[in-house]
Amino acid sequence: MSDEKTVVIDCGDSLNIAGVGDLYAKLLTALADGQVIKLDVSRIERIDAAVLQMLYAFSKEAAEHGNPVDWSDASDAFCRGARLLGLAPKMNIEDNKA
Image 1 (cartoon, rainbow, N blue to C red):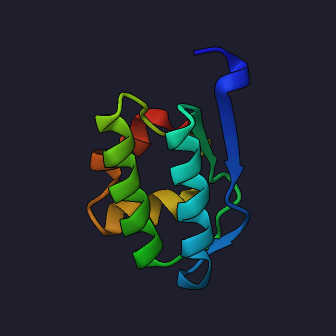
Image 2: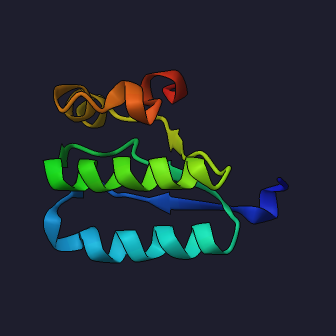
């Protein structure tokens, strides 16, 4: 896919349950539009388990549609949270970490 079909979603430095609905809506819109989804999780310092679970479910759905999620320079805190929940290998995070 070309660069114009890529959407970068900046996740900021903290993701919690309060913002999960807005984030999920952005992700679904990008998926429906057929865009390549790059999640910039490079600045994450805090992330709720519920958000990680939603991101896992979404990444699984996106992969089923032939559109794997690119975890842009995943922060140590993001990777640590995903590992603690056993999601890092399922989300292909370690392979995407630069």
